[in-house]
Length: 249
Image (tube, rainbow, N blue to C red; front, side, top):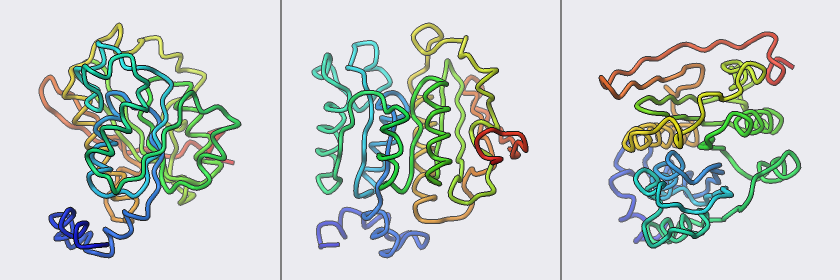
């Protein structure tokens, strides 16, 4: 680190859990964020601000005026732009030391393995079950840790799936793809309170940093649930499904 970086991250370096060694580890880290929307926005902003060296931002959508209230990577002047392009401009302005790589379009089963090969961590910030299942399966095959979150209305959840450890439950232990058709729809028809995405996104960014630094106390094996209507949190213990088609093999 140079003097400018030492000053930029000085308040974080003061933490004994991080120190200079931890900060240097973050600067070397590569993280894939799938989704540059309500969850991906706060995750990307906090990871870039915290000094993660390289962020790969994947999204296939363009900025719409209905996104702005919660997708804080984007502004009114970005309406119509690719979300990846808008995100890159915002993140580079926040931290020019963060190398931002944009990945437009959906990452299919052929593209995911090559993309995961060189990353340290994956963030699932998408908004549909088929993509979540595909990411989980790819992370299991590549043995990459996965941080996942979801929000709807005034509710949210977050968890960590340690595919790199070999003994952690995975996303499909929690949700079976045969039972989940996402019939509730998404924010477009169910609604979302904007700060709920910020709360869960900040939790996901925190968990990502803890995983990258190998800190204890992550949400691995646990599901954190938020009900913002009464601002209550609940944590459920997750167990591996011995019949899981992804992680039991």
